[in-house]
Image (cartoon, rainbow, N blue to C red; front, side, top):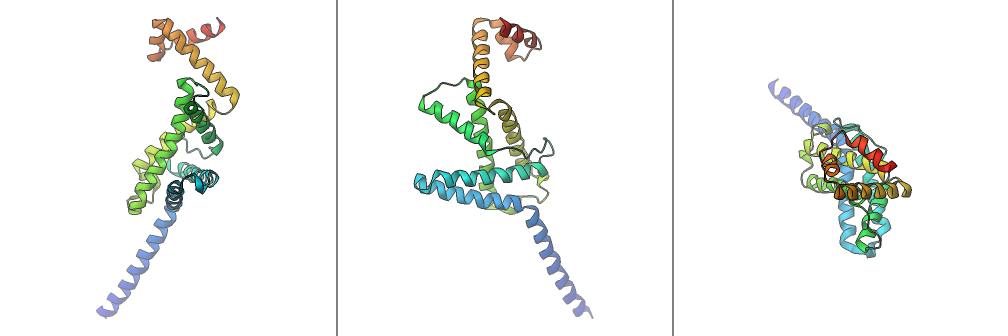
Amino acid sequence: MVARFDELWTIYEHKYVYELMVIENDARRFIIESINLEVALMMLAKKGKSSGQGEFDKKREEMLGYICQINSVANVEGKGRDDFKWALMQTAENILRVETDMSKDYSSAVSDLACKVRTSFNAYRVLMQKYQKNIEIVDPQLKNNPELIQVLTLFEESWGLAGNQLGSTECIEQLDAFSRLICKTGYEHKEFKEQVECRDASIFMSIPSLLVY
């Protein structure tokens, strides 16, 4: 009787553990897919330009899709947005590439936004490299992974802000001109510079007056 009970209990434990593994793997599926993409990206990077920039960008765009899906279910501290488009990364990288080629000198406000877009995306890639070494450290309840939430929060903030400011050529030109005007005025007027740096509420009166002038 006891032997039969032990046998049945062992069978139950095996089934329980198997079902638990299936559930956990399903919950982590976006992370697993992201890891697989990161492995592919690293292999393409090792091959260099001969592998084709198009294939590299295609897989990065796929990665963005998984980031959006994970952000929508895990980032309870943010808005959980899942509507970010690959075109924003292309715009950001074009801005940074143009600056590197010195064919145009963007204001620091424009280049900083572009840099944050790329940096936040790469931060997710670095995290996937860490998860690749040991997927078991990922809590199936994705919102319970502080490091993941930190990366997602940075991503959502960076892409959300840049999406509004770098969404079109007109927006970029307006931000570039406006930020240059702010910097120039701050250089010429110490009090204004201090207002901007301290985020003084009075700048909401000063800036409109500056633009009208």
